Length: 146
Image (cartoon, rainbow, N blue to C red; front, side):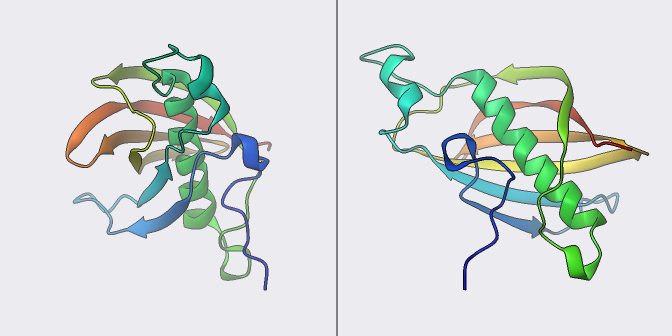
């Protein structure tokens, strides 16, 4: 049996290896945790600071957006459609901060919380870590076709 992809992207632009629902936050908001192993063979590592490669910040935001999209699809999906990728777009990036680099060979843990839904838009909080080390955090908004 073939496993359903986590995102609608092709393998070269998928930034999640795993995704699972987490316990809701204290306010009852849906949460998810995704992971991404930063394979040193990924093409962006070759040219993003040769000799001292790190994951580009824009790709960390994309990883957060993909995890948020997965959460939104799963949280809103009927049991029959659970886990099915949806056509979602990154609508806004708010106050994303980068605290430390994500390096080849590390595994990024991407935690996202669905803060609010406004019809075809939703806002999420994202935190990216490697182990206990905070790598990045911020808020993003996604939109879907009406």
